[in-house]
Image (cartoon, rainbow, N blue to C red):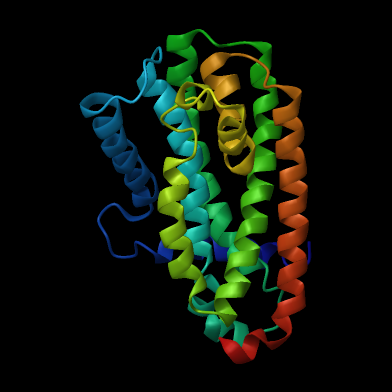
Amino acid sequence: MAYRYLFEQMVRRELRQKYKGSALGVLWYVVNPLVLMGAYYLMFGVIFPLDDIEDFPLFLMVGLVVWIFFSQSVISAAPSLLEQGALVRKARFPRLTIPGAVVTVQMVTFLLILALLGIVTVALRGTLDVALLLLPAILVCLYAFVLGFAFAVSILHAYFRDVAPILSAALLPWFFISPIFFRPESITERATYRAILEWGNPVAPFITAVRDVLYGGVVPDLAVLGYIAVAAIVALAGGRLLFERLQGELAVVV
């Protein structure tokens, strides 16, 4: 609580600084994901449709918005400590607030887009149901998971500058094996492969859970809910522990 004001200022600075001087300003945080979603829909929903799924555009968009939040958060968080190196060297404050502010900015954008998409999806799909009450809890778990991941990649990149490029390269195949364009059961009937797609990919259950309540109007399986709760706790605790263990020399390496 003592650094709440500092955290708020970092979030505001992050919002303003990236697109400072541009005509749209902070609106680019919303425009960029929307353009990206439109491009993916054109490619995989119109030109090369991958699956025969009812209301496929909505199915696709719900998965995309979750993925974009995750990927943009970790890509932006990785170099964040280096970008704020001058502040790290000059002032004493919880360094966790730097990647935390980056993820929070992405979360704000994500919530704005998800709210718009959610209204359209619920209206067209008729999924206004009690299952929607689970959405806030799912989003809290998603935020905690991404935050923990961001803590880890930001501190590792401060020491090992190859982390961000490796992460950027890894996200491309990771994207295509995530259940964004498809349902895992429609890709293969082999249980082993399907299990890898559903449970070996830590982002997949989050996509599934958000899609279940918004697109499907159903409560996710208990296994999915349990997975995202455990993943959120492990990622947040593990990322924070790693960050705190390595931050001792942070002012030197940045």
